[in-house]
Length: 404
Ligand code: HEM
Ligand SMILES: *[C@@H]1O[C@H](CO)[C@@H](O)[C@H](O)[C@H]1NC(C)=O
Ligand SMILES: *[C@@H]1O[C@H](CO)[C@@H](O)[C@H](O)[C@H]1NC(C)=O
Ligand SMILES: *[C@@H]1O[C@H](CO)[C@@H](O)[C@H](O)[C@H]1NC(C)=O
Ligand SMILES: CC(=O)N[C@H]1CO[C@H](CO)[C@@H](O)[C@@H]1O
Image 1: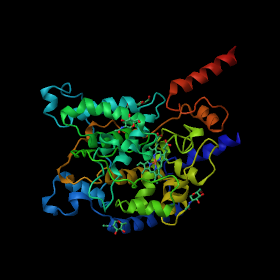
Image 2: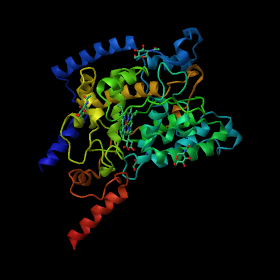
Image 3: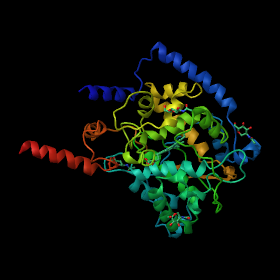
Image 4: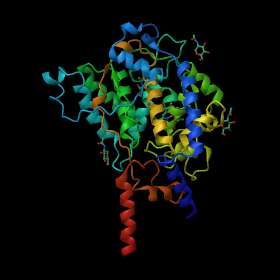
């Protein structure tokens, strides 16, 4: 019972703000606004946007610039629910830039949406793959970034990328199928990350741009973080990618969905918070708190949660207004991530409308069972939390037994 109450407190933390903000929250908002203004001044431009005059910017170039400078929301609800004008190889489809992406969106959504309503292992892989393709870039490299090289070269075989083999196989199959319609690997990977994010319940619907160029050259090594890294090392590593400490805290929140495989191989499938496959903020308080035994905290996350440069933001995402604040910040930070090393940002096009709708609420129908598993009461969910059929199966067997 104690453990259930304990878990319930995390659920409460994740609820939307109460209608009457208290004094503490008001002060929090003021502090946040002032910190935000300071950060906005320090935001760096990237790629061609660094040098292009405002008068040369396209409508999309202007929007992306505003997102990077923290002046515009990176989320959008613009959606086209109509079916595509034709099959992917039809003339009608070829005449419509986003048509092929609509087909891809259907196909990815089917793989990313779990039968439990959580997002699947492939979805989480897609989010991490997007990060690992794009982040192989820094302000002192002349190549790398969101250029598809993670799958077009042997980059995927580097130990940094352990755990990504299933999504790699899937993504390569999509590339083989859709490249003939002009789809680059770089775009496929980044659109995949955005579709996966919004398919995860509570995840933000991030504006989605296409037109990145592929690179058949493997990216530089040593640019991805390790679980053993100190906060200082991580903050510097990301700063050289133009990602500030605040955005780093927002980005690592993606671990809210995670189930690790290689940090501790003896505990393959153990999650990083009590709600794997759900884009909630439970990860933040649980990294600083004492979650159930099956939750594995990454040392890198613990270190970030404590450093004076990252701890305040960690607390903000933990609070009662954490979810919307986090989604907003993650969307902006990930937009930046997805454009590292891209030097034709001003020429990109937008296909946000093909993304499925965001899911702003989620009932954890299997949470009771999941909680028993998290307490270590049984092992059979190991690495299978994706699969609701399995979870319901366990419940109904138990129900049957009790009736007999
Ligand atoms: C501080 C830097 C980071 C470190 C040290 C780190 C490290 C890791 C490690 C070790 C894993 C587990 C891999 C495995 O054993 O299977 C993991 C999983 C994951 N990471 Fe990170 N990560 C970092 C930042 C990020 C960022 C910025 C994102 C996304 C924007 C991200 C997204 C993910 C996702 C979605 C998973 C779950 C994969 C799954 O469930 O299969 N991580 N990360
Ligand atoms: C994903 O699955 C859930 C429940 O199984 C459903 O409510 C939701 O609409 C699905 N999402 C999409 C984008 O198809
Ligand atoms: C990666 O390693 C696998 C297994 O060793 C191998 O089959 C594959 O060819 C390698 N991929 C690349 C692109 O080198
Ligand atoms: C790259 O970023 C780091 C961290 O912000 C900074 O110290 C360094 O001066 C930058 N280097 C270049 C070449 O811009
Ligand atoms: C450098 C540093 O602070 N590393 C710490 C990261 O977190 C782990 C777990 O708390 C510590 O053991 C490390 O010393």
